[in-house]
Length: 270
Image 1 (tube, rainbow, N blue to C red):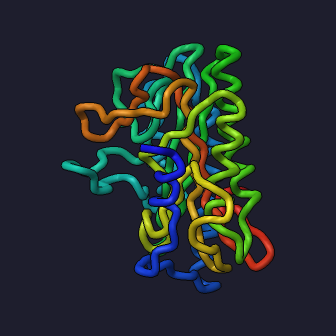
Image 2: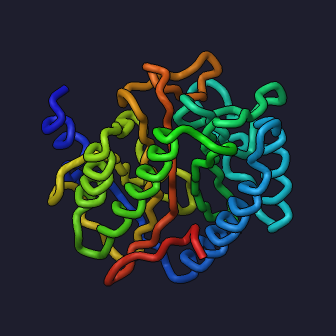
Image 3: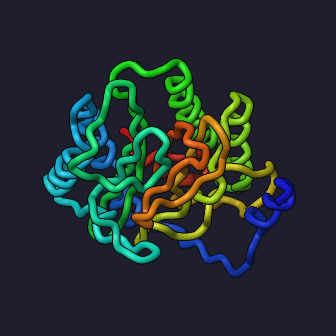
């Protein structure tokens, strides 16, 4: 499909889309959830070492979430045919997102691993992801992690009440593609609140000046997924794990972000 046509389909204004603006009380709960998510990711980073299994990461993450008095958002989340069986998505190398932890998969020196977690606090969600290097990684893998993170913050920098969602999408796409990588197209960011996935859908590609207008009180999960090679992906036989079609490395960063009158607040950062 032609990219310009594709953007128009995904980013056009749709009156039927209902986006709930959050009250101050709701924002406070989401901020609490987000700050806990940030702290948990800081803890997880310390155990990302060669030899640790992806199941070890899951066990550690669930314990940490519950120690904060919160509930793992992903555990039991519905999918195409099964519910997600873990508290964290652990996606290694050419796994894009939704990797299922298991006790046989040990991280190896030179791997890259994406950690995606969500928590629920008093009925409200947060969602965040980071990609880590396992020991020293190749120059290309290091650049992939750096550019994916940069694209996230460049996208977030476009957020304020009254601007277009397409400005966020364009900033992410431009950052990624100007550095020779590709953005995943069939998985996108999303609104978040009393549900993990709310409207609007937030593509990581688009045109400036298109899409819905952002309003103060919206809360968005911005999450570029970036591949070294083609943007094409496929879903593994487990009906969850998404992989790059060409086997190239993939990275993933995500923040939960509040739209404010004059800018934004990253709720999953302190």
